[in-house]
Length: 352
Image 1 (cartoon, rainbow, N blue to C red):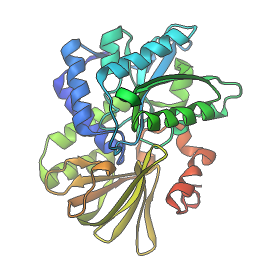
Image 2: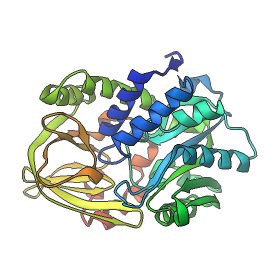
Image 3: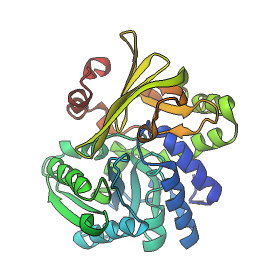
Image 4: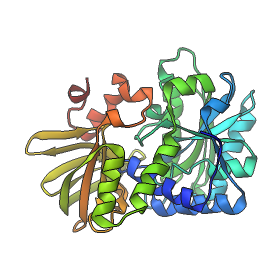
């Protein structure tokens, strides 16, 4: 695929398709549209394939870290650019390209604004082709690289909560401190992190993730109502598992995450930012990193976990993990084991 000059339609498709691939997380649609439109107002972002970069060129991830449902979160476009600038100044090598950490309503277009503001190319790539809760899950298995030093920067908040934070160290420690920074900033920070070679990224990440999101968004926006839901599941090779009213819903923002459960049509879904499990009558229908997502049953608009409410009429779609573009982290048993302690349900026995 040649370099793509991104436009308004592509941006909208990226946001809505990213919302589906977010699996309940990955930010808000409105914020994704806002940041995407601002990028297009400021310049003409271009999307390059990862094959356009030499093996030894340096790629950097940009990310949103925190709890989308946090009431005191405060993030502005300047925070995105500031975090990248801080990281660029901290590195000894030039940044050849930037890419998002994951697909999601706000995250698929993360990087577009930074690219037009800095001139650093944007690459059709994500650390993971679906959203995930922890920073280490979005680190392309760098936890397994002996001696790797993680460089991360975070900016966010306002007034007494405003902070600029930079950390270099082991990946686990750096990710944990960035998460704590999001809490101190009121719930959400813009992050730049984890320089890697293009060769390493190709082997461990999700090349083509942005194109996939735009394709899903095109299917969603090209139809209406149930037809749009059918178009999405057809595009991704998934299925509609349930459709009905949200009869019960709990959410708690803790440790920088949104954690809770929702009941729809007799099905119980747990989430840790993203949906983790789908069950009914003791039968497990899907387990993260399978993609589970809720869509408005009438309009097909994606509904993220932070926007759930009792009484909503939602359809639940499932796409098996084998149909997704996933990072090598999504088969890392050690990283996935952390899910069980948060949602208090077995996960590993369904995956390995």
